[in-house]
Length: 428
Length: 154
Image 1 (cartoon, rainbow over the protein chains, first blue to last red):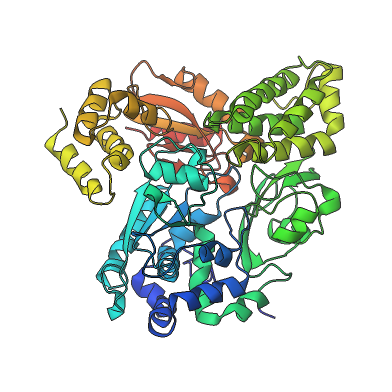
Image 2: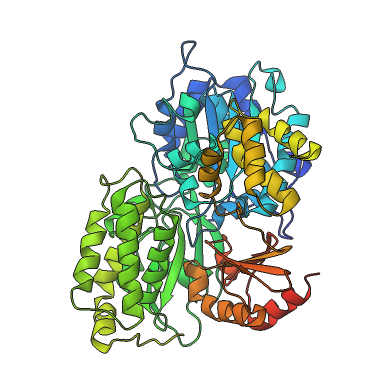
C-alpha cells in the first residue's frame, strides 16, 4: 500500500513555495469549484463532520461539530468571521510553518471553504511575527487568489463573496489561545475570554467567528475533493486522516513527516527520526509540544492519535514530539518549560501568574543545588492548582502536564537534586 | 509627528478592521519598522490618530514581545531559549554570544551595532539551536557559525 500524503505531497523539495499555477496543476481550487457549484454550505459542513477531522492545533475537537454551532440563515448576525490560527508558538512545534511556506494556497483554499461552509464574510490569517517566509508567501498567494477570482465579491460567479486579510502578530504565546487571539485581533492585550459564549456565537467584535488551526484547514480541500470515507481510510486508527508528526531533541534526524494518524511513537522515532544519537538512550518525550505529559519507554508502541495518547495519560497535542535523552537533566528540562509558561502567562488568573512563578523559583533552586525537603510536594500542589476549571484558558493546565508527569516518571532525579544539593548531569 | 509615509501605511490597515483600536498593533509595528522602536512621543501620535489614550496603547505595547519600547541597535539578535533549543545546546550559544558581544540579554553593545534579546520557540526545532538576526532565521548554530553570522552583519 502506498502511503497517501495529501498535505505535503505537492510541496516543492527545493524549499520554494508552490505558486498559484503549480497549485492549480495538481488540482488546486477544484474543491472550491466543486463546493460552490454542487454543494450547499450545510453539505460542506456535513462532509467535514462525517470525515472525523479533529482540530490539529492541539485540542483535537471535532471540526465539523465546532462549525455546527455557527448561526446560519438570513437571521444570523453579520458579518461572520473565519480565522486561520497561524500563531504557531507551542514550544517544540514547527509543522504549520512547513505547510505555509511550502503550499500557501492549500491553506487559503481550506480557509475559503471553511468560510463558505459557515457563510462568513471576512477571513483573517493570524500569523506570528517571526514567520517571515510564511508571511511573504501567504501575502503573495492571497494577492494571486484575488486576481484569479477565488477571493472578493462573487467568487467564480457563485454569488458568494469573501474578503481575506493577513494579520501579522507582535508575538505572545497567548495569541494562539482561541479567545486571546480574538482580543489580539481587536487590538487588545491577548487575555482570554470566558466561555460561554463560544466564539462561534459571539467572537470577534461580538460576531460569529470560527477559529481553526492551519493544519486543520489544509485538510479541508482534500476532504471535499475525495470525501469523508477516503479521509477515514488514511488513518491506522479511529481518528481519521494523516498527521504531521515531528521530532526534535537528540535524535539522529530531527524533522517532520506526514504519516497515517495512529502511527506509533516507536515508528516515528526509530524509522523516521533514525533513532537516538550515538551513545544516548531514549528516556521520554513530550508527544505534542511543551504542554503535554511526558511519555516514557513503556509507551513507545502507543499509536499517536488523540484517543490512544489520551488513554496513555498524555495528549497528542500538536504531534511534534520533544525527545529527552539520558544525558539531559529532566529537572532542567521541566525548569525550562515552566520558565516559558511563567513568562508567557498573561497575568489574568491567579493560579497561573502566581503559581507558575512560584514553581519556576522552586525548579531554579533545585537546579542551583538549593532544593529543600518539601519542594516536590509544593510542586505537586501547584500542578493540581493549575487544573482545568481554575483558570480562564488552557495555559496553566497545559503547564501542569509536563511538570506532573516528570514528577511521576523522573522522581528519582528530582529527589537526587535535593539530596546531593546539585545537578548530577552537570551539563553546564 | 508621524511621517506621511507612516500615516499612509496605517490608513491601509484601517480599511481591514471595523474599529480604529484594532489597528493599534499594526500601527506600532509600522512606526517601529521606520524608526527601530516605539517612543513615548510615537505612542502619543499613534494614540491621537486612533483615538486611544497613551496608557491603553502602552498597555498593549508592553504585552507583545516584538514591540520595542526602548531603542535597539540596527541589528537585533533574538536567541531562542525554549525547550528544543535548550536540549540542543542553547546555553553554549548564549555564553558565546554574551562573551563575544560583551553584553547580557536586553542590552546593546557599546558601539551600538547589536542588541541581544531572548525569544520564545521560533518553530525551528528541527534545526535547534536557532536564532534570528533582524528577523532572518539561522539554525544548527555552533560558536563558529555564530561568529561568521556576526561578521556578516554590516
